[in-house]
Structures are given as C-alpha cells and as structure tokens.
Image 1 (cartoon, rainbow, N blue to C red):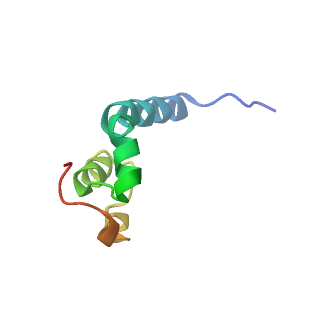
Image 2 (cartoon, one colour):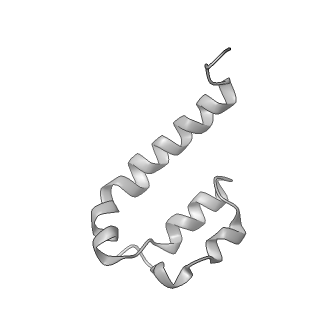
Length: 68
C-alpha cells in the first residue's frame, strides 16, 4: 500500500501551511483570546478555493469585520 501523497496533495498541503504561517499564526493567540476570526481571513481562504464560500456564513457572529 502506498502512503505517499500525490503531487496535488503535497501542493495543497504546502499552500495551506504557507497561508497559515502568514495569515493565521501571527494572530492566533489574540483571536483565541478574543473569540474572533476575521472575516477577511475567511474571505481569503474562499478566494483561494480552500473553503466553500457558503461556509463563510456559518457562525459569522464569531467573526470580526476587521483584523484589529
């Protein structure tokens, strides 16, 4: 059985890791403490095709309108 990732899977992993390192990691502690997650960050994930845009409407009451 082959447990290696396909090239497409490696590319997706690398894209998500890079995004998280640049757009989430620097702010994660504050967002956790505040109980928020910026809608701009969710929109970026959607524009990159990493999440379904419909899911950006879920729990929107917990998302802030700006990065603060």
